[in-house]
Amino acid sequence: MININWEPKKNNSKPLYKQIVDYIINEISTGNWVVGTKLPSQRQLAQDFKVNRSTIVEAFDELKSKGFIEGNSGGGTRIVNSTWSLLSSKSKLNWQNYIEGSIHKPNLHTIQMVNKLEYKKDIIRLGTGEPGPQLFPKNMMDKILNKCSNKIMSLGYLEGKGLLELRTILSEYLKIYGINVKPSSILIVSGALQALQLIALSILPLGSKILIEKPSYLKSLHIFQSMGMNMIGTKMDNRGIIPAEISKEINNKVNTLLYTIPTFHNPTGIVMTKNRRMEILDLCEKHRIPIIEDDVYRELWLDEIPPLPLKSWDKNGNVLYLGSVSKSLAPGFRIGWLIGPEPVVERLADIKMQTDYGSSSLSQLILAEWIKSGLYSEHLNNVRSKLKIQRDNALKTLNENFADIATWNIPKGGFYIWLKLNSPISMNKLFSQAAKENILINPGSIYDSLNNQNLRISYSYASLEEMKIGLEKLSHIVRSFLKI
Image (cartoon, rainbow, N blue to C red; front, side, top):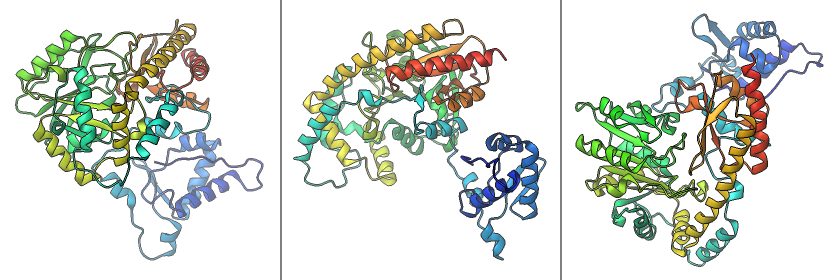
């Protein structure tokens, strides 16, 4: 993908089109823009460079005459030479062919932009799904690190399933959620996302069908699609995924798996009721459909404790359970866990050893100390209190600025408010305009490609003041689109 962070100088004696030609040749010759890359449209470049389209046409004509680019009516304009290849008789390696022919699909363009803009200075992150700096327990972390520093004698590789001490501690800790498993049925992973990658690589054949909620966080990733599997969105109501929708997709000739976030769903915030959980579990057991239960938000309840996990009622080993401290403590730990039947855990551990030879030894040692010391439970109480204030602040600001143009849920935990605009607008245009005004949003189209009315508002990252300023600005931007 081509990134442009430059504009020609209009007070320069050199013509605008010449400045653009020089800029593009420099990007090509330094390798920033590789041979085979498709250039943005003339219209888009005119917007990026803030010039007339005729200036771009003139620049393209010169670049074509010099042999740098070629264009046709159907395939757009591509870079076909670099300065080195023009000076050499040998043809230049076309890395773009390798990139486009690879197995793993690229992120959606909007998500690529989100990932880059999150680190732009002074931007207000209204959609970021991680705990903000104000939620980081620095004093507690200091205590834990001081304790651990005296215990660390080496930091070698650990066994495939992860640090035995941590798995033993988790085995005891998870009993409070009705999950009773041996340490040997726990695999330590580098966040729940890696667990999904391992599942896609290790236990599902090509052509498998992955049932997900509609909308779903998983739709924003290409983990399963890149492995040749089909993602099927199934409808939800305010009690969670609808069992009848799952039944429609059952086909005994096709391997099928259900992925669900039943507790503080991402992005809608819905909590699946206990009765619905039992229905889903019974249906999947009857048809022998494995379930991936993504439960990373469980401990972030704000108003009432949610129902127990599906895994707590799983008597036949149908459920692969995912947990993590990325949402509750610190994403930088890159530590999560997968719980499942021992043969499955053994298989995933083998593939994990082939891919990264184990998650961070240091992070596992520190997390073991966090849970064992009791400070993790104390931290959860603190973070819930702060998150509740942040949620209430966001809801208050929404009431003041969006009451006449949108509706939204009142989440009972997790990070997200699922806001629905009363009238559909272009989410791409809204995203771009908001970014120009230093507001970063997560459009609903990330989680459901046909969704042009929803936004995922996260109250976990921005400070109270940033949330207020950001939502006020966003309201003005939305209203400007509704007038058009």
